[in-house]
Image (cartoon, rainbow, N blue to C red):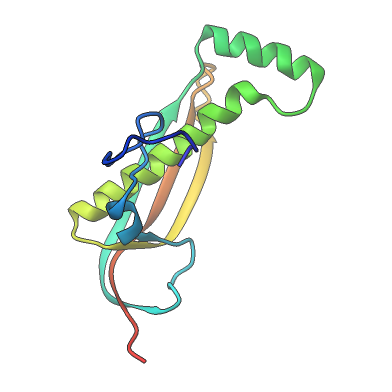
Length: 136
């Protein structure tokens, strides 16, 4: 999540849209092919969440000024973080629609559309699965 305060009883963060509460805790997402302590009961298929983003004129102006001094371009950092969270939430929503309770092998990628518009695409791709705790 983005770190902002969430109203009690809310299902999603009003700032970034990330799931909060019980739903967020009950759905597991891992970049690894397995999750320690769980076994994959059923593989449901590949899921992908995309979010294309661009900065407005003011954001590009501020980023241009920041880039003249070197270092981090904070005008883009926050936008990219929101896009990453949004892509993960979209892939999670697709997995839930399929009946999954987890995603394994999550891969995040960033690419520029190359349209001279400054459009960046964040992609989250993984495998929707049904997992269950391993029996001891």
